[in-house]
Image (cartoon, rainbow over all chains, first blue to last red; front, side, top):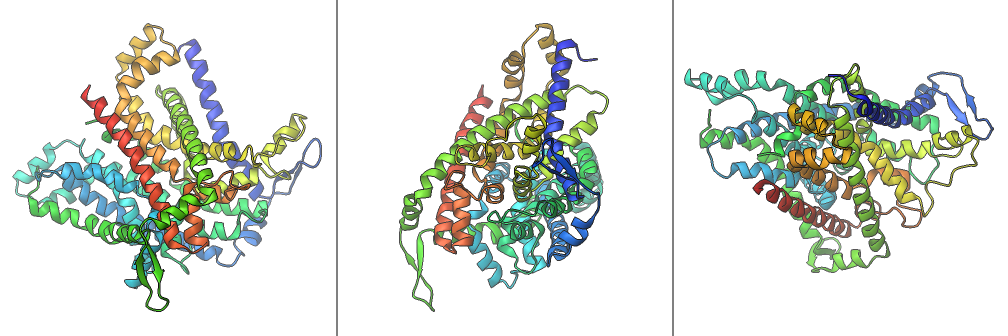
Length: 275
Length: 290
């Protein structure tokens, strides 16, 4: 069905305005990172060129610690995503297929934990990690990160797994498969879109996290923490260099945007709004 | 299939261990810290001080500003995010050529981290090379008012948060709900010639009330915690024009290294989030009973 007159116009205008508002700031930043910036001191404003990558090569990547922080961010985000998704998948499977009473409620309580601000326990978390000799280590930072994101991931997967048809699982159980086998050979293949979408969301949130790595790492500095170090509010930023750093932080997420978006189409949070 | 007790507990174990060690334990310590003071140098014993830390947070000059700013920022940003998100979700309901690309494009701002968003908007609002001043100069208008002065800064940081969160509200949260409303109901609404508001009143609100409330809760809790983007964009200033409770807690914990005060501010924030959750929870239960 083609949209009718007035409604179609309204729709087109809204979507165009939203696209422009969403993307123009980022395009402006991308141009600045490539050395194309405007000089508003003149009227009409002049563009400065030329196009080049020197703000990346000489600006950002030469800053001490920036390249390392990129590596740390990538490693920690991948580890965190794996730990989060695995523990959340097991828990969501248990919560949706259990006979134990009261666990259904537990899933709803998880949402409350998602809302507990990290600021309420930032210092104790660092002290506990130090006590466990996990402070500033890859396992420590990724385990703490997984704990922070697991309630949300469990919630997402809970909504997803609840909607899967139960017949294949019942058939496998009747044939004598253990719950472990059912999970690995029946549920996992069917739930892959939901699991990938969850992993994508978790990766993005983990890559972008600031307070958690601030509490759990020191030498293993991640990109958002490095951004705050390099571009403090107190100094006016060197804009092209800052723009290049922002682009470096955004590009890995843009690379997963299309698969992430595909997976999201199969998947919704709507599951936890209704009963 | 249904799992027996042992399997259930085994499958829940990894999550329980993660949450127990890295959330519940530190949170309990954090709560304890907020009622204590470290005393006695080397032995570093904790001394129970009751509500003293809370009293000190509340009596800070910036606390009143933080509460006021937080309320304004939360109310304004959540209502904008919900209405824009719902409008965009409705606009994306019917297929059209390029819809997938448009949807993907609209998701991009959410991928920008709060910290990066703060740095980016600070750059875009710079007089020398920013987008705002370019726009004004292009239209031969006199220079724009400073978007980060004492009167405008709160609005500016709010709008920057809205820029980053609308994609979340649209694509991730509301669109599936809009799509779940059956086609005949939409056709019926169109036949009756309902206005935009009519669509909301008679179609979306009845059909999506639980989802809208849940999304409202998520966005409200998130808005109450706003700190990182402001840290980079305005530093909480000028003066205390854009300070929030989250920023106050961050500054006490990280910059002033006063973890007890930081934890107290953090738990006040947790209290605010819980209060909001409770209100939404009651509304949600009511809407299900109907």
